[in-house]
Each structure stands twice: as structure tokens, then as C-alpha cells.
Amino acid sequence: MLRDEFQELAALPQPDVVAMLGRLKRRRRRHGIGAVAGALAVLAILAGIILTVGESPPPPAAATLPANLAVTGPPQVHFVDADHGFALASSCPASAGACGVWLANTSDGGRSWQAHQVPDLTYPNTDEGAEPRVNLRVLDASRAALDGYDGDRRWFTTDAGATWTQPSPRPDGVVDSIPANGLAQVESNAGGPIGIVVLLPDGRSARLATPPVAPLIESMTDVAFGADGSAWVEGGNDDRSWVFVSRNRGRSWNDVPLPAEAAEPGVPHRTTGRLAVHDGRTAFLVDAYGYRLWRTTDDGRHWVALTAPISKPSEDIGMKATPEVDGGLTVFDILTGRSFTLPGNGERFAPVTAAERRPSDRIGARFLAGSGQSGQEPPYFHSSDRRSWTELRF
Image (cartoon, rainbow, N blue to C red):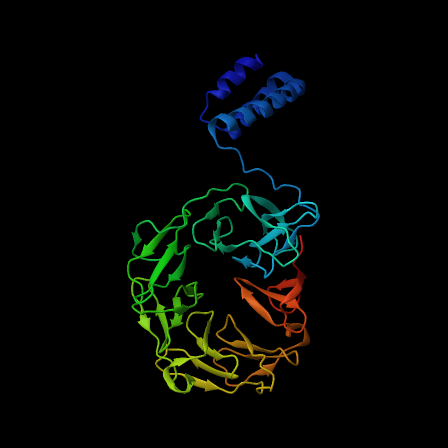
């Protein structure tokens, strides 16, 4: 009788487990608990058969993590939101001549991590600080790419590293805009205008139809995206510095004029300042070694000089600055360990609490800080608010 029942159930649109359970409940009233217990056992087997035949199986579980798995240095970490993030890691057994590369991922804000080894990606196990020659590029909570430094290899995952493909990183085709969940990089062309290469959500690359027109030689490789969706390109050549912004995902670009007082001596159109932007509406020009700051809220039509809260020391150390969600800016005095924050639209910097004094970098939705005076040494820590910190460990 049960065999006939399951033959009928298997003919239902698959997998219709709810309907199957409903029919088993009705059978319980007719045949008693014993029959139903046996039916449930068969149901478990049948559900496995249905899944195998009708649908792709779930991604494989993360492998057991090696005892010596550690973040690569300099660390490559990115959080797409406060909970979901990726970190590039490696395992270098003492007896092996090569280190294996792993992609670690978290869904609880970095309190716990899973990791999957990247196939066919190793680097020499030496004592000279060798590291994997790939860049981690995160699109969302499931998709990430590892692009080789030489530009001819890419590893791509759509399931947080459980499975991998190796699409070509070379651009194929043209797109009119940068997708909302895509990434983009500046491509310098000696003696000619730049190009912009877009990493698409399916792992392929394509050229942007309308990049900004400028012969950038020195450039910020990644196109920076503001929280409002704006795209920013920064760079220059021997004679001039440029900043461009697009507010329509790269379909058109506006030249952002730079403050005249930020010019290098003897080079009136070139600056040593660097762009800092997060919210997409407020942009800062940070002259880290000159200890000078400017702010614009109208794409460069007007710049306001800000008084840096740190005096320029005799040591050539530089000032570290991080843009804030509210359009503000936090600066770190690496020499003394002090930090100061300028609130959005504020005029003066104020000291921050001791817990917030770590020099840190924004890594998507969280902050990353190292140890030591420079904040660039292991162990590394991450935080969503720069007040409470969690060590980055696997």
C-alpha cells in the first residue's frame, strides 16, 4: 500500500514536500502511527532522490580549516554589510614548498568564519614575506573574484567560495553603464584616453562605452563608489591631476575642479592631495604629507579649506584620513596615537574616545585596523563602529 502511495507522490510536481506531508497526515488517521513512521523514513529517501534528479544539490560544506590558516598580508578584507564579508587567507605548511590560498567568509560580522580553498592557486612558501599575487574583488555576499596581478587569470565564485570557475578577465564587449552590483577599474593607455573595465555580476569583463576623457597615467585603479551610487575616478599625469564623478552609473562624467591652493609648487594643475569620499555627496581632498584638507559638497564648484587638527611634524609620517557615513571625516595622528572627527557639515574637528583611536581603513561596511604604531602590522582587527573591535582570525 505504501509503495503505491509513494509512486503516486513521486508523480507530483517535484519537489512538493508539503503535499506529500499532507497526504501522510491523512494516512496517519487511517493506518496509525507505525505506518506513518515507516512512511516518513521512505519520504526522507525519496526527498533525496527528488533533489538529486530534479534540482542541483546545495553547495558543498566548507572544508575543515587548516590549523595554520591566516590572513594574507597586506590584508585583503571586504564587508558588503555589517554581517557578510570575505577575507583572503592562506595556509603554509612548514613541510610544503607552496602555500594554498583560501577564501574565508562570514555571515555574523566576523565572529566566526568558513573557508574554501581556491583551486590551482598557490604561491611559494618562503621566508621573504611572499603573498598570493591576486586582488580580492567582492560584488555581493555570494560573489567574488580573485584577479591575478598579471591580468590574465581570474577565479570567480557565486557561492562564497564553495565552487569556482575561471572566466577570462580580458574585456569582451561593451556596456552602457556599470551595473548596481558590478565593479569597475581604470585602464591606463599610454598617450591616449583611459578606459574603464567593468566586472559584471556573471564574472565576465566588458568595457564601459563612455569613460571620462583624460590621459591618466597615475590613477586610483578601482573606480570608487559612493553610498549614493555615484562613481569616482581619480588620477593624473606629469602636468595635471583629475577627479571625475558620474551620477548615472558611468553613462556620463563630470570633471571635478580641484582647489587652486592644493597645487604642487611650480605645477599649477597638479596636486599631491588624494580623494576621500564615502556618502557620495561630500568629497575631501587630503594632502596627507602637507597636513592640509579641503571639502566640497557640490562636485568641486566650491572647496572649503579645513583646519587640520594635527600639526605637521618634522618626521615624514603623513596623516591618515577616513571618510564617514554622515559626510564627515576622521583623521589619525600616527605619531601620537590621537584621532579627531569632523561631523558631516561641521566646521571643527573634535577628539574621539580612546577606543576609536586605532588608525583604520574602511573595508566596505566595516573598518580594519592593524597593530603597531602605524596600524599596519598583525594581528588585525575589524569593527562596525570603531568602538568595539574583533580580532580577524579563523
